Length: 344
Image 1 (cartoon, one colour):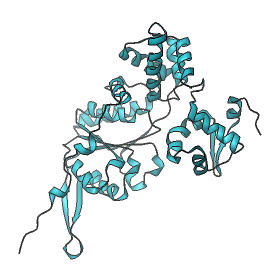
Image 2 (tube, rainbow, N blue to C red):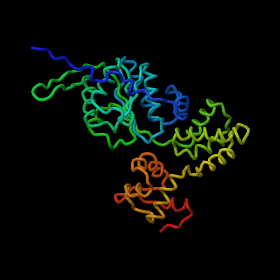
Image 3 (spheres, rainbow, N blue to C red):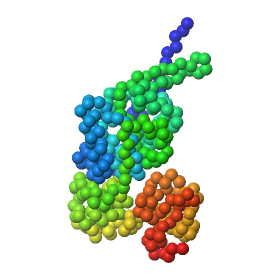
Image 4 (cartoon, rainbow, N blue to C red):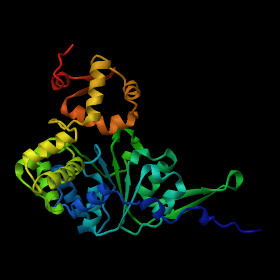
């Protein structure tokens, strides 16, 4: 009887195709250079950092890999950065990918079998994993094993992969979309909140020093007020203000220069940009303040609903310009006040 062999060549064992990205974009390159390298340099999210510091210290004392970690929160608050720091603090390698990039179970097997003991697997947007791939993660996270079924019908067989003990770090902007079975397998869960102006100002000063641009406290505070509580946005605004200061000032950022630069970029005193104002004006002028469903609002604005939910809505809700009800989105009195309108 001819012996059947497992078709390893059909499984992409090289994880590089999924984990390496072309990082030619200016924002990506500069964001990496501005990221803190360790927990001491990480600014803000004090509760998250303090609790994580205890977990990391305990794991290193026991000489064990860190438990699986789930990081939740709006985009741009430092989830990816903290995953990199975890790998640095544990002295291990990190392999980064994203939920949409892992299309098949074979892709996941290729990544997991390339991990060494104690390595970090970082999956961004983990809520976007397919159900089939997600179910493959369950035994991998619990028992460091994967069961892979080959052939079909009466010839079906299960091949068991034994994995080295690793740490999965998942990041998500939509924690509600993560199923209970996957969530329950994470030993450490942390939620990121928007940053305060003081922490953002500190981040901006540090970034300005790394970029080689002078900035005073008033200038840093002005940028932080308009950064929507998000370090990624703060660093992006800093680079644009730096350009303005380099061309139209003496290569130094003051409050006046920051205000002029941000106004020219269409960012008002509350940190709202043109897209934010379009959302709020549509809600007020077209739908009389709401309530209106997110699908209807997105269709009117010619935007994807996920774009509004993930990138626009969180800050508008946090800042009090918008409220979410069972019947849809509604404008608040603060929205009418911002545009100089009377409430209905």
